[in-house]
Structure formats: C-alpha cells, structure tokens
Amino acid sequence: MKKNIQDYFFLFFNLAFTLRHWLKLKIFNSPMNEIASLKYSIHKIKSQTIFKLRNNQSISINSAKTNSFKKLGYATFSNIQIEKNCKIILKKISKIDNPWDQENILRLRPSIEFRDELIEIFDNGVDKFIKSIFNSDYEIHYHTLYRSKRDSDDESPQGSALWHGDGGPGIRLNLMICHTPVSSFNGAMKVIPLNLSINLLTKTFFNYRYWVKKQSKTSLKNFDRTYHRLKKCENLNKLIKSNSIKYFQPNTEKSGLIYCFNNNCVHGGGFTDKGNERIVSLMHIYPSTEFTTTSEKFNSSHEKIEDNPQKL
Image (tube, helix red, strand yellow):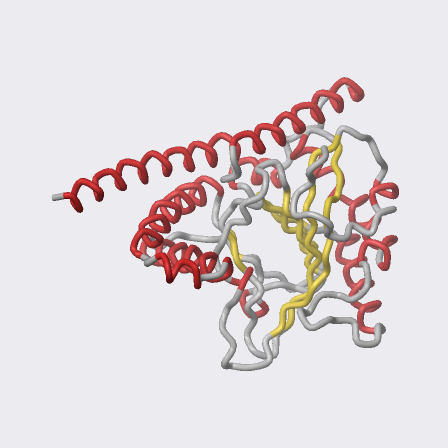
C-alpha cells in the first residue's frame, strides 16, 4: 500500500515537473531554468529594439529561407560565391601539414586562418539571413571547424552523432557552413522540426525521470554525465523510430551549403559511411546590441571560452 502511494506521488510530481519542462520549451525554446532564459530573451528584445531605432525599420523577413526557419526551426541555402569560398577553404586545408587533432578538429583557428573567405561567405547572404532571423545585429560566440570520418566498420555513433538537443539558450542560432558536399553517406546533419522536437524532448524528460527512479543510489553514483546523456539519446532514438518521426537531411553535390537551426531542434550527425568524409564549420551565434561590420566580426578567433555567453 505504501509503495502504491509513493508511486502515485512520484507520478504526480513527475507530471508537474514535465509540464514545467514543456512550458520552458514552448515559451523560451530551451530547457534552461526560467531566470536564465528570461535574461537571454530580454537581451534579444533589447538588441531588436536598438536595431530598429537605429535603422528605423526591421530587416525584411519575406524570403523563403527565413520563413522556413521561422516555421520549422531550420533552413538551408547556398550560392555560387559561398560555394567558391568553401572550395578555397578546402584547398587551403589540404595544404596544411597534419591539420586535424585527435578529435578531428582543425588545429588552427579557422576564424583567423580563413578570415577573408568567411567574410566573403557572410557578405554573400549569411549576414543578411542572420539579421532577418534575429531582427537585430549579432555576434559569433564560438566557431570550430572539424572533420567527420569513419575508418572502421566496427565504429558506432557517439556523442553529437546521436539524436539530441543542445540544451542551450533558445535565442541561439547554430550555423553550419558545409565546406564539403553533404549527404547521408558522410553524416550530414539530421534535424527534426522544432514543434516536434519540443514534444520529443518533453517525453524524453518524463521517461528519463522514471529511469532514474528505477536505479539504485549506488548505480547512480557510478554513472557519469556521459552515461546519463547516452540514456536520454537512446530514449530519443526509440521515440523517433517508434513514432516514425520524419526528419530533414540535406543531400548536395556541391560545397557551400549553409545550414542553420535552432540549437534545441532535435538533431544528430557526423556518423559517416566508411571512406566518406565531411568537413564543416559550426558557429554559435547570438543577437547583439552592438553594431559591427562583417570584417569586425572576424577580428576575433571565436575560441570556446564558455558554453554560453554569461555577460550580454
């Protein structure tokens, strides 16, 4: 009898906490605590207000790619100039002696090494797109350039190759510059629309709390952060498969796809077929109250100092 009462209490509190989790995702597009999310939201509103007052108008949001992002939480586009500069970056990488570290991340600072090419890429559509999404100016918080490659048939998806949501601020834009062509063969990023992602992340939260309840205190002490993350990813994968959730995965024949998505859209990528390779830049981008040119934006190396900007 006592056990049944405890189970009812757990169910009640689990439903209450899950409702709170869903509300955070619906209101802020993020599972972060409400105070932190509110701080980022206020920063975005402040950035938009300053931008509108200075320009006396908002950036047009009528383009197909902007409307796609507003509706789905992701968008892709490219053009000849972006393709051209991505090919130049690939050529420069091919001339670098031992360019990749043990985690297949470029050893050099890409924002500095490929500054001219990145400025050209941003000046040919990316800058305007970001401003149309934010209705404000922006800052590049972080930039890494990495390679996805599988050398053995025995390897299995790990880390970011598994279905997941980043859990960052809802105002953050993840921007990928795909220097190589991308497809399912070389681990092109898969993404699920934001409205479906919110439901998936909510169900995963509910199920994860039940999983934790079933574990002994000793077991939980032995499980590290990576293992807990793996359990959430596994649950997401089961939900996606069992509900036949459709996802988007690009398939291009040319370099230069620009791939933007809300960081809390459920996504995963980077697990290639053996012998295939994918080389991409990943940037985390936030609204900004400051006005800078694209040249000024690339005066920084954009190295990762903190997961999310604490001072806005």
